[in-house]
Image (cartoon, rainbow, N blue to C red; front, side, top):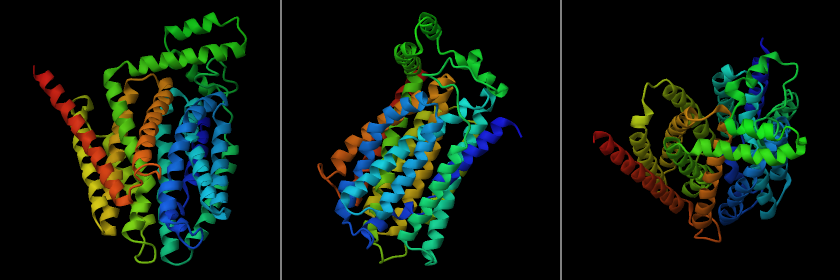
Length: 443
């Protein structure tokens, strides 16, 4: 077995284990239940918004620290954050403790950038596409199994929501142990770009001209700093390397268009994920209906994976059909969210949520592919980080206005009507762009 494949399998095992959190689909029911005795207003308006604000604050720092620390320590820290999250979730009490849970969970979420980029520093360039597929499939597999496991244990009465949290804690602890066995990385994109690989002939391809260069400006930076100390090189050159990559990436109008949709759509997606359980709890309070949250999460994860694979083989010229497809699907997603907020039936909320998640997965796959086509491989992590930062910035504004106790603090059904309108506006914008570009092409 080749070395790069062993590393990929180990990382995938970590990915599966860290996503095996069967208690997560039932978090709201756990918080408002007898174990924590929190009110729905406290959960919706004081606790859940903390994740958004913390994620935004941590993302930029984590991006730079991940590169500086060479990935692996940040992956281990991600596992530790998950362990701390579930320890506080199990044994903590009160609003402040649960806000701490949201902060720790945001730290774990932010550090996932290390999981997404570690493998590129450990495998040959020719294997990038296949390892990307493996690592993303590992995450989807873990989420799907977690949803099925949680639903089966709850439905059969083998576990209550409280006990499920111990199972989640066990899996994230196992993931952290696995992370400790990941091989160290000796080279990164910005802080350790010039550091040579050691004892790994398979990784020498990363030093090829296709991977090592950024622009001619990078060569100039390196030569200018050749007599400087390593600390001076780091402080002076990292900023310039980031700026060069930023300019070369976002100066392309086509890529900028897809990145903006990516950021706006991800903003709405994060908000839906954060408040879908409160919507389900409002429509069907715990104890009054059979709860199938785990089954719903497992189903949409599985179908999203199939849809994502299918779209990867679709022979479509997205430079021509991308805008109308974005427009139509955005309008569809807006309709699904508005319907979810307008219905009093739990099954409607379940079906519309699954439809939304599946179509989002399809579009974000298309957007990621189109953005990647216009980038140097070493710039992809930066662009992903910037797009995610913008999404969180927009989400922070949306949360402050719609969900936070300092804003309107709307009830979940009213929130989803707002989110539906948000996607409707996004669809109208892209319909206008598609019509404009079609007219320009015809002329």
